[in-house]
Length: 129
Image (cartoon, rainbow, N blue to C red; front, side, top):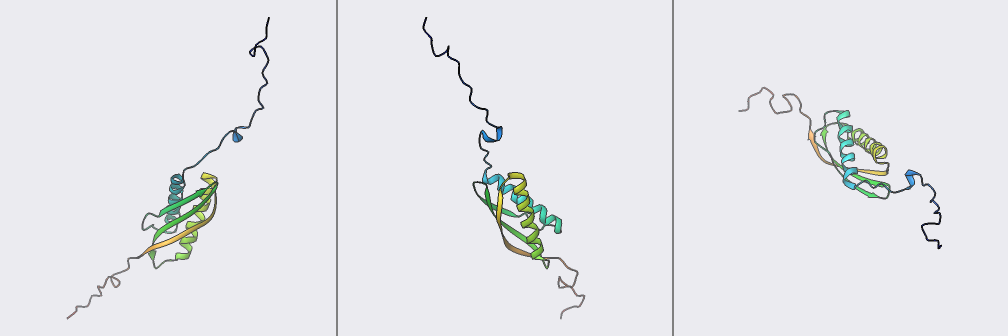
């Protein structure tokens, strides 16, 4: 009687922990949406957000570099608003995507004047002749 390959006992490979079995890749567009939503929420916390922020993200391995374009009301504390956006975008991407965010560049594309009383709109109550 001959022995075949099926008769020999096979050794089982060592068990690999689930986290080491593969890789998870998060698409750039997903990280972009996370960044834009975080920026929108950061601006909403500082006051009414004038327009939806636009974000672009470049991901290399587990590092995300973010650019956010904003429209802000003026006069307002632009520095505080930008700091809030940077902080929220960085924290959200790190928490949701597990990526490091070494930089968040912010471009203020437009300043929108805040509405003021009647004097600001040119109506002072005087008649021009």
